Structures are given as C-alpha cells and as structure tokens.
Amino acid sequence: MQGDAKEDIRSRLNIEDVIGEYVQLKRAGRNFKGLSPFTSEHTPSFVVSPDKQIWHDFSSGRGGDVFSFVMEAEGLDFRGALEQLARKAGIDLSLYQSKGDQSLARKKKRLAEANSLAARYYQACLLKNKTALEYVITKRGLKREIISDFQIGYAPDNGQALLKALTTKGFTTAELAAAGLLNRFGSDLFRGRMMVPLSDVSGQVIGFTGRIIGEVENAPKYLNTPQTLLYDKSRHVFGLYQAKQAIRDENIAVIVEGNLDVVSSHKAGVRNVVATAGTAMTEQHLKILKRLTSDIRLAYDADAAGLAATERAVGLASGLGIELSVVSLPEGVKDPDELVQKDVKLWQTAITGARPAAQWVIERYAAREDLASASGKRHFTTASLALVEQLADSVEREHYERLIAGMIGTSLDSIKNKASKFSATTEKAKKPVKATVEIDQAAAARAFEDNLLAVCLLDIASRELLAKLDLSLLATDERRELAEYLQTHPSVEAAEIPKTLQNTEIYDKILDIELIAEEERYADLSAQDLYFEAARFIQKIENEHLKTMRDRLTAQLREAEADDDEVRAQNLRVELNALIKEIARGR
Image 1 (cartoon, rainbow, N blue to C red):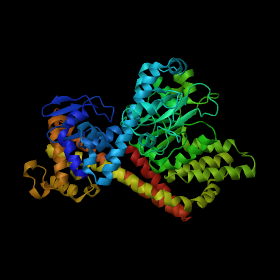
Image 2 (cartoon, one colour):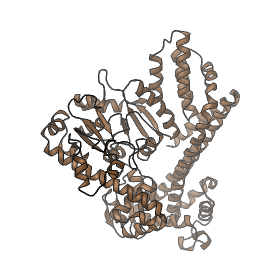
Image 3 (cartoon, rainbow, N blue to C red):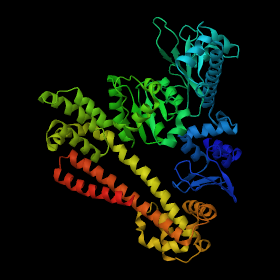
C-alpha cells in the first residue's frame, strides 16, 4: 500500500517544482541546474532531470528521487518525507492504510487541526491584550518577524476561552483533551501565559510551551503540553523547523535547555540553535539532528543536571558518529538568553569556542575532587574511565586515558589496567557502532564508484585509469564486471557494451548519471579535465577502503585490549596509526 501511495505522489508532483523550493534552478537543455544545497560550491553541479524524475549532486556524490531529496533537505526519515509530499500533492495517506491505521490517522489529523487552530487563536489574543503585548515586545524584546516565525501568542486567563473557541468550531472536549489543550478538570490547560507553539520538522503545530506572565502563586513558570499522540518529548526538537536551514548552512547544531533561549538566539540572528525538553537528551534527539549535521554542541547550564545530561550524551553521540562538544558560558551568565541580551557576539564566541564534551566532563570531575589525595584520584579515575569507556573509537579512548593519567601524574599502564574493568559492561553497547560506520562508508564508496564508471562510459581516455584500480575494492560483482570490461575494452562505445552487462539495475543507475554528466556536469570540460575527474574518484574509492580497514583494525584493537593481550594491542596500534596517516595524506 505504501508503494501505491509513493507512485501516486510521484505522479502528481514535478520533481523540479519540489526541489525548486530549496534550490534556485535554471533550465539547461532538457534538465535544470543549480548550486548544490549540500556543499558550498560556486559552480553549479546540482542537476535535476524531469524526464527521469531524478536528481544528482556531482559535488557530493548524492542523488535519487524526489523522496530522497526531501529526506536529505529536511532531515526526515522516509515516512516523514512521504507525509510531507503527500500533503503537498493533496493525497490522504489514510486511504492507503488498513482500517485500524485509517482510524489512528484520522485521530492524529484531528488533533493536529485542533493545535493549529489553538495557535492561531492564541496569536489573535496576543494582539488584543496590552499587558501580554508589552511583555512579549518590551520585556522579551521580540520583534514582529520572530513573533511571526514562532507563532507566538497569548492564552487568556479565564480558563474557558480556548475551550469555547474550539468547541464552536466543532471539536469535542474529548478531542481537545487528547490534543493536550485541557487540564484534568476539563478547562484550559494554559492560562495567562505567553504561548510558544511546538512544531514538528515540517512546521505542523503539535503542542505548546506556556510562559507565565506576571507573578502567580504556586504556578510553574513554564508549562508544556503533556504526552499526546502528536507530541513526544523524547523525540521532539524545539525550533528545528525554524533552524534546519541554518544548521545545514553552518553545519553545526547548538542545543540549549530552554525554548525561549532558542527564540532569543534566533532574534539575535544566531539561528542554528534548538532545544530538547530541558536536559532530557535522548538518542532519538541526536538521530534527528544527525540527519542535518554531525557537529552538535551542547549549551546546557553548568549545574548538576547539565553535567548529568552531558555524561549521557557522550556515549549516545559516540555511538552515532557525532562530534559532541560543550559551549561554556562566561562567568556570571546563567543561560544563553541572558548572554544574548548582553552581547550576541559573546554568544557567537562561546559557540565557536566549544570544547570536546568528554574533555569538558573530565575537567568537571577533576574540579570536584582533591587530586592530591589517593581517594580523590580514585574517585576521579573511576568516574572518568566510566565515561571514556562509552567512546566507540579506541584511539579516542586512549587519548583521554593519557589525559587522565597526566592529570593525576600516574602511568598510562595503570590507567589502562583500571579501564579494563569497564570493558565487559560497555562492549555490548559498542558492537553496533562498527556496522553503522561501515554502512555509511559503503554508501559513500558506492557513490564514488558509480561516478567513476559514469565518467569512464563518457570518456574513453579515462578508462586507462581503471588499470591502476584494484577492482576488488568495488562494492558489487556488477560494478566489478562492468569496470573489468571497460578496462579490457578501452575503445568500445557505450552502446556496444554486451547486453548482459547493460541489463542490470546498477548499469541503469550509472547510465543515468552518465547522461546527466554528458549534458550538464562535463559538457564544457576538456579531455584532460575528465581524466583528472576519474583520477579523483579513484582516489576517493581507495580512501574509503582505507577507512573501512581503519574501523576493522579499531574493532580488533578493542578485542585485544579486552583480552589483556598487550603485545597484539601494541602491534595493532602501530598499524592503525600508520593507516590513519595514510588516510590523512589521501584527503
């Protein structure tokens, strides 16, 4: 049923219209061209083929159909892209589902409509309330653009206002309660508060944060929508809809504790900032952000809760291949909102100066212990090594083990001996990392392989370079067979290639790339330029192979360390370090 929905959506949408909302496209023959949205190139190499309903980005090696583009551009999984494109195409996905799924989809749609109407109602109420307007504009310093971008509003204080407004629109109290808009007494949950909608990554309102205006006894300063069918705080990233383009442009995501910290940062022009529900960081939050960037920086408060959240995040981020760092605020500043109000340049400087999260945590451990005493050293190393053992990369672990040893003036061997006590409990958590990394690297390698073969189909002179490539490095038999044929038949035209080699899915994909390349990417390149392009792809393939070898050696080193086989471990370290240097030379 999902396949039927996908094809119906594809038939109703033009790929160039969808991508044209993200990339400025210009007609170039039968195709369209533009600058890559994924790299900072200056010469257009991003091509969309309406005839084939595909796109290809020659600068990054990515490509696919309209669904894969939306997944890449919006940081969505396939289901999210399907839902977004279905809305754009005017297709009701519930019609493609079972009766049970249809009922759930209709209920979710109804709750989404209630939240969307509530947001508009709160916006209208803000414009009518002088006290609320003064708080939002004067005290919070929010401009019209930010109020509009975040759909900021005001919840009246009489307890029945929203209830009456939405029941007149046909909503039942049961629906409003299920949407998280009513309290347990059946009246408005939010009263006398500045309202900030919580949106999903496509901009649909799924809940609210309410900030109390004025002093109300026994009332919490902030109140959030409870868990509903739409809102799940373990998955929701506040401000992602507004921040995703800036995150992609900067290739950095900054996570703060408070939703209003996000609003303040955006107000000051620093837009690659989002928030989780306080310090409740989860793996899902990191996975969602990883679709946009692998450079994530935490700007939590430097209190016990912030330290605990960072400790949890270190292990989660390492397992996902994320570079996690910590943004430290200047002394005397309690949160990013206060720092932005003081000087936005200080906030930008703090973000730029973020330090590796593991190092930051270890330094916090050191600050709370007396490292001159035996007990202080014991407590410090116990906490620090428990953290370090969460790291997936053995070279990175040894880096921090050396740091710990230096901080207390002891030998690396003694630190490693103590670290071995933690290995058994962390090994299970580390095993999936290897597979994840290899899958990502394999996908990158296949993209370079397909581009190489496309160039060789187009340019006969480039085929001599295939003799310098170890064909066993290619990912599949189909790719190896085609490369071997081009290697041994350097003068054959593409049309003369045997049908057995042409009748494959891989060949069709390579041919699509080659046709686009001939029309657009390589139309103005000289024979020498094409030759160099093929050489570049070969270097990329070889480098990806070295990275795969690096990860295998890392896994073997981890096993040797767990087995206390120091001789084997040392030999693997030497081999691994040499390989890392070789990879660096190939970049």
